[in-house]
Length: 511
Image (cartoon, rainbow, N blue to C red; front, side):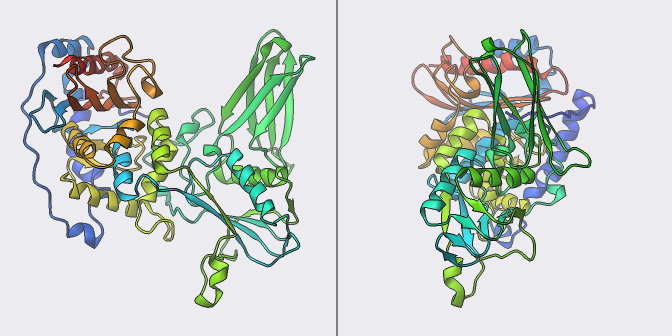
């Protein structure tokens, strides 16, 4: 779920005025057509100005929140193109939070296709003789945000079945499929051990940048500890004491004067505690890859004479070959991710930021043969939006995840895109990926017991100053509606949630 540690401190009215004024220059400028292709696309016609329509009952619910009404943007319209049933400030741009993942989803389905898969490839830089690689094993990341330790372990075991038992050189990790600059990351919060969902894109991501520590009692009441991925050359310190509490926490630190970092598990544990899992992001993605991949290769039974190292300018790039060396460009093996259709379910049901950010970068032209850049991905999305009748003033994407406050849209434009997607060939797949009211995903505990339960498919959005719902609602008569409900308030924005839910219930009760 999107979240952030920062929030604007201007007054509510000042902040909203500045946000609306800046939306064209700050929000959309990164997506302005920077390629010649995009510049050649004709500007779309304007959407009809919606008639302001806010039923009295919903007006009262908004007032009950105690929040300024100008902080709400609402639009509900039948998918068949009939006039809007609810429209309030629907042509003003609002911060989207994780509802922006809907735009990422729609663009990815159109531009990549539901069968698209990320590919992590292994190349040999030397001859393989009697199970021994007389050279380096080069692992090239292909942007797979869902690559897990279990996946990698199974793949390494497959490499051994293919005849690779010993690597006499190094295992070289190549992350060049993503080319990100420091300025590409300033709009999103820094990842911290407590907020692993802020982890940043990496073409060779492992376990989404998260270490999992499983603590379980044995028959004698002692705590057994298992770390995933297995971090090679990291000293594990079990500092759990005996006691009545069942509390454990992990601390990862570099120790001055020693080459080995330490992972220390603190707290109290007893036989009655059973099992517990700690999830945290203690190391950089690169350090996690270096230590985790070596541990997994050894766990798979492989032998490594050298080390696991990062790609350097002098490292081999076997996939870049001349015609004479064409055989070298063929990967020895590759790990293939689940298809996009499955990735979207994980991304939208759980509001997975890393999958969204990787998908956004994967939209860059000719990825992964050409390194993805933020500018190239944004330009392609901007071109896609223009072809779908959306002006640059109406929608702007930054990272595609909702973590960035530069991601804004007008509620009317969001519903316009949702209606087009519903009529398209991938409409059912998009609907299937969304949380269902009162049933699953981030809506499992919301809208239960009302008419909207099981009848609304909505992406949630949460930032410290934003709440949002966007997607589809089925009325009592079976009519499908496109919905976008956004609230931007510098303080106490959580009070908006019941009012947004009331809008969904109102829509579901319509005939």
